[in-house]
Image 1: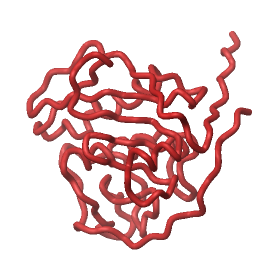
Image 2: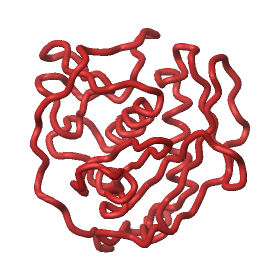
Image 3: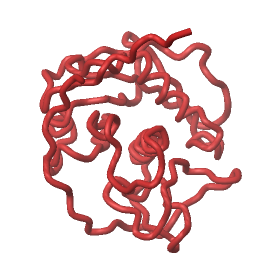
Image 4: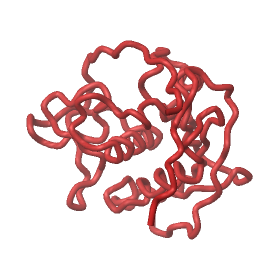
Length: 212
């Protein structure tokens, strides 16, 4: 039985700030802790990444038992376009990322700006060189890292060479002797490193991704 062909992914350097918003997750999870509701929106200029699939991947990450809800402090629930939300997770083109983040316009990283959690589609599609783990792991990392900022957490550093990188380490820019890690909880315990960030340089700015 042959598989259906996978649609190629393409996106311009800067989209037109128009969005498709995912439906609410069904069923919603229970649990304990403060409830935060989030939406998932994909910029419409991105092709080959349907909003339902992106939302399913994000929600699977946030609902994972190794994720932010493991400590019992938070509950995270995806809501639909017409429901009130505490924050929105955007999958955006690099140029729209710069507009939403309102920080240094690098077109490369992802960010959190207020109630905007902005995932750069270039990283979602390409990952980063030398990460040492597959693209699905990198996507889980970028979701957990930026949502971690929305939960009030700052950057952390590698605790020891050869150890997993804390999820709040800027793994996109370098591992600094640690190994790739997508999860804030390991073996049921919150995993973290020393507070602080590295002075890593950004790579050259990227262009659009064309279909094919």
